[in-house]
Image 1 (tube, rainbow, N blue to C red):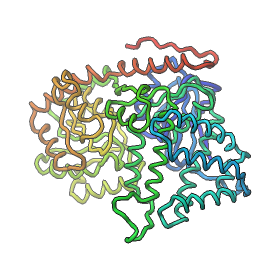
Image 2 (cartoon, one colour; image 1 turned 90 degrees about the vertical axis):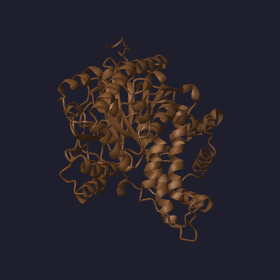
Image 3 (tube, rainbow, N blue to C red; image 1 turned 30 degrees about the vertical axis):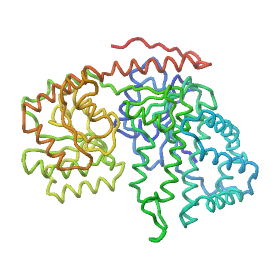
Image 4 (cartoon, helix red, strand yellow; image 1 turned 30 degrees about the horizontal axis):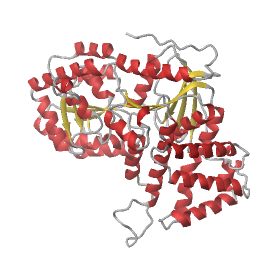
Length: 531
């Protein structure tokens, strides 16, 4: 069952914009959370509500951000906490309701990537089933978990579709996968009224956004920093908890194990549902916009809005820099597999061999994946770099950027990383892997942009030698480093300012709030031009 806590003690009866946040602000630090904080503070005239969706309460510590004054409401829900034993109610279950649920699954299996007719049929059926999922309804949580009809349904689905021999693993996978749907349906029934909804991903938050759009008719905006389904695929392919019970004779190397494929198809279906429900769909750059369209987003509703940084604040940091180039390579980010911190550490062995003064700073929290963080520490120790690779934990960029010579991103997936833009504004070139928009940020997009020069170097994924070579090329050549610094400053000043981003989102919010049929009492949209 969903658990709610509110350390901020903010409860309102309505709001202008309800942000739907999965595993991010205000409990997790990082680029997306920084962006959410930036957006809220950029529109002080709007009253924001926050609906945070997390996995389990113990997976999150204390809030990482102080809430701006215009956040009037916050609630948190944990979708992988289960019913207590005392709440179990066993029943036979309603055969007709489960038959309709079978129809829903069939429609999801045949759900076209951009088929408006299929979406209309699907949402109509969802609209019929969602009320049945209320507590005491024919398809409530207890019926799904403990009824005879649910057991029969699972057994039939297993016999018809599952290619893995373990029914036990199938049983628990389906329950774990689907139980959050009941939690989110309950959240949707009780969420305070909002004039519009803004989800910062597809996935579970996007599904909640789809429910709110169906339930209220109010506009839904979707902003994707990374493509959620793509990032979940990366996580799923790296996950060790997903079982493959086939023996050596049953396995086909060309086939994805059934349970991994089941999770992928589940998140793809949630993504298509959110794309079809959204009034406006925002990507950070063109490659991701095209990926959204290929994944089911209606092209006419998509647009690009690049991240923007607070240029006046960050540009002041340049005056704090020393004349000498600091021999410090800094990775600003969470210590998690998707950031591939291990490659950065391995690259430092070569860097230090050739440039003994060099140091690596890893500035980001280690609590999200503690096992991975321990492995990173072990690699640094094993390479004899314990004095050269420094794990600093979360740091304020204003304090750290004037002290570093390069911002390094060794990630295996990124969108349009704020840390590169922030580094450029503060006068720090970057070295990044060729993922997301990193090549665009470092080398430029248009001919005019490219004419500004390279703001650093781009290397392949998981190539520590190439990463080391690129870093050394900049750190040991002052002329090249200063040219990269100048290119980065010029690029961010021309194309990636906060005012540009606010202007685009002001338009989106104005459109959404104008479409809202019943504005919240006393609320008024005042979106003046901000300087």
